[in-house]
Image (cartoon, rainbow, N blue to C red; front, side, top):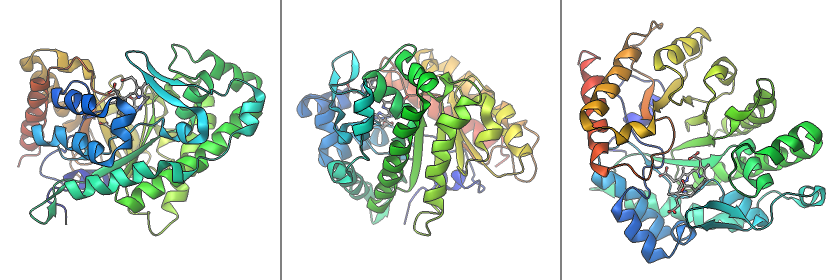
Length: 367
Ligand code: CP3
């Protein structure tokens, strides 16, 4: 029994009295309580590998704010770590792999991740589900997640983050056979990983495709969207998982909405470069009931609270004007940022954003 399940309702395009809200990377360095737990754990992977610390930081934003969903505290790079690529987070420099895929032999040696190595993630999911219980009810649903096969490949090939993912693009253009081998292995790994997260208690699954938007049109469909489609098909073809909402988020993917509408995803994540109303109408024209999630610029949270409220209200009003068939245009929308929250965000500003979502989305439904 879930106390507040409006997030799941919106994912399923069911009617709600207001718009649910959660924030990508809602547990993180902008919160002093996160910094304190991270210091106790030593480093980021120390946090992620301990189910009790992972549960503690997952709940921190929920204790501070009125959020409508929890998201598993982990990282997308756990899969390549489990493949033996050797992940570490160098302070201030982001993720680094000791053994990137920088030779043909490394690609040929790559194997599907051993899910036994990821037990700490599934144990964290179970621990978080327990911590979410209050007076015999689960406070809010828990979202599990993975990186997309393409986005994981970007980090696996470069060995770190990158401005232009030059080595990844070189492989894509010169050795599509090697790229496809990596993607096939990632598809199988991500599918197993999400299924096991759901088995452990995740109630929605989000696929983060952070770098799909740097592909040319045509290549996006082949190398990023198609691998995601395979994962969704597999999840949805299993009775055990078919009712679990799947969210796909391609940053910079607003121009590919009609293609994404055929992916089988229940929800499409949007960044701030596409207007909510346009996205809603474009999806509506495909004749499929697909919910949307997003999309304000995370750096809006660095503005003053009045400006945050003004822009959030404007964004919801704009969506309320969408011309769509059937239900109210505000249904089937999960409010979120268009990317992860910035670490310089003043924590009190998040209250202004959430309050504005609640006020505007209730009022504009005429409730
Ligand atoms: O949303 C949440 O609260 C759940 C936790 C979560 C993290 N990473 C924790 C994290 C999620 C959903 C992610 C996803 C993730 N990780 C993505 C996809 C989303 C996106 O932001 O594009 C990507 C590309 C990564 C890879 C990654 N992990 C990078 C590039 C970095 C370093 C840069 C940064 O923002 O810190 C990380 C580290 C990381 N993952 C931190 C957190 C809270 C910060 C680590 C720390 O405490 O120092």
